[in-house]
Structures are given as structure tokens and as C-alpha cells.
Length: 397
Image 1 (cartoon, helix red, strand yellow):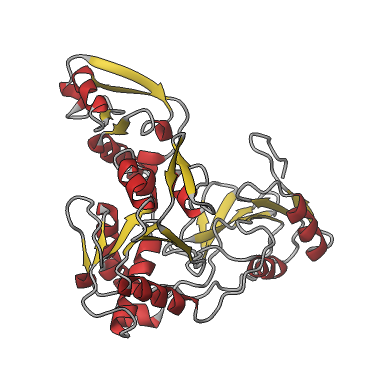
Image 2 (cartoon, one colour):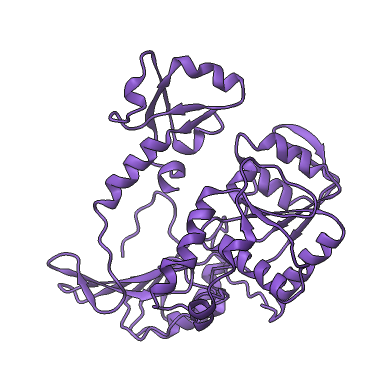
């Protein structure tokens, strides 16, 4: 996914001029990034396009799957697997220690230890919310940390996580099914989709959702990840809950991966959050948003400037997509109980547990300027210097 959708700055891609007709047919043109690609090497008349990877789709292109595989393989050759626990030598003067966090399977915080200066820097990455049914809660880290770089996805907001919030999700799905709605759940493919499948399976098992309800998914990545969750991850032990290890995440037989993307009445359709904005899906989404028998359930973040963000943030009778207005007759519902990011209180508890904390850099503010966040951190961490780093500006640690 990083290879396909990551932003690595301006790049040069090449394509076959013979395929230009595909763009006018709405199919998109395959572009290549690797000179040794078995498909790209067969091209006679080459066209060139220079842009950033996220711009390919809007321009009518998509990255060749073989090129993506080759790039990913090159990266994987340089990856070393390290499990949390104990120091790992990074260089002659720097060691690293990794700590588990419940954001998603495999997430860790990184503590860099400079043996020359004696200073330690902790990079939190994404701190887990402790809401996952698959993962145990974040541990308390008792270490000396001079400088901490921490996420602040929710700023200083504290939401109340209702104990029965996920039950309400299952009950809402059941209600819409009884009304004969077409239910569409756009969701992050990694971990979020598996948690949704878990809740839907639980709803069917507990007779909240009608027995025999079809769950369809439209993502090869979801299918591959489902196999991973039902197989290899259950052998890893680690920080998984007892229920996950004993009973598994869900019944894989309940989830079907049909060919095509036809969403039918009476089904629950789970799609990737990016599929709402895909060049091949926009026309279908325009129809669905106008269908009063369609229900969108959003449980993941949607960029406000994307089609998914426009639909999930709709508060009126019309939505504007691509400069045109469309009737917004579909029902739209949001649930926050699937959040995988820690709230302010959890992050503050972690920071207060560190010894010798002198500086905190607050990042991942999701568009927040940081002024109010900084003030709150300064009140709750007296004597600690609070820094809100600015994009493209070097910060002296």
C-alpha cells in the first residue's frame, strides 16, 4: 500500500502510448516505475508522466502491480525483524529499545539511547486506544526519557467510550438490515476491517444480526489480511487477548469476496475507505449517495476533501462532488468506538511515567494549529518544554 499510495515527491513514470484510449474509456492507464518490469519492458511507444504518486489516480493513471511488487521486494530485503524487549544496536553510539503499543498488531514505540551523551529520545508513533478486541492494553513504560515525540491525533479532547458502544453498532446494523437497506461500511483495510468483521460475526452469533446475513467485502487486501489474522497471528502469541487466541477474530466462512462491486439489498458491504474515492468507483458512489435505501456507516477517518469525507461530513440535502451537486438521500451514520488512537488522558499518563522528561514534541495534530494543545500540555507537564514542530522547519533537540 505504501508503494502504491505513498508520496515520494515528484517522480517519472512511463506508459504505453497505445493504451491512451483506456483513459478516455474510464479505465485508466497503467504506468511503470521500474525499468526491469516484465510488462513495461515490452512497450514500444513510450509516454512519460511526471507527478507525485497520489496524483496518478486523479490524472487517469494507476501504478503497474508488477512494479509495485518489485519496489516492495527491494524494500523487504533491507528489513530486519526485531521483537520488543532488550536493546538493539543501531550504531556504535546509539541503541534502540522497542515497546509494545495497542494501536494495531506489531505497533511499537521506539526509545533511542545515545550512549555518548547519555540522552534518550522516545518516539511514540501511534499510541493505542486499548479498544481493540484483539490486543492487550498498553503497558506502563518506566524508563528515563529526556525527549518524547508523541502523537496528538485527538488534541486534548477526551471522549467517553461507552461500554456498550460496539453493541449499539451491531444493533444499528441489524435495524438497517430489517429496513431492507443496502449497508456500506468504508473502512481502513488493515486491522479496522478485521475489527468490523469481528463485530458483525459477534452480532450474528449473538442473534442481534439475523442469521444468514451476507457479509461481502470488495478488497483483495482484506482477503489476504483476514487469512493472516485467522492463521499466522494466532500462532504469534505476544500481546494478543486470550479470546483472540482461543476463538479467533471471526468466522472467515461468513465473509465473501465476490468478483465485481455490485452492492445489493439485504447485504452488508465492507469496502476499503479509499474505494470511495477510486477513479472506477466515483460514478457508483454518486448513485448510492442519492439512494434513500442506502446506508453508509463510517467508522474510520475520511479526508474532508475526498468523496468519502464529503459524504461522511454531509449535513444538508445536497453534496458537491467534482464541482457538481448531487441529492444526498442516503442515510449516513458514524461510530467512534473503533478508534485506534489514544485519547489525551492515556498519553498524559504515559508521559508522567517517564523519568527526567525535559522536552515534548507534539505531532500528528490532524490540522490543529497546536496553540491550545501546547497550553494544555504546559499546564499538565510543568517544567517540561513543549514544542509544536512546524512542517519543513528543523527542530533542535
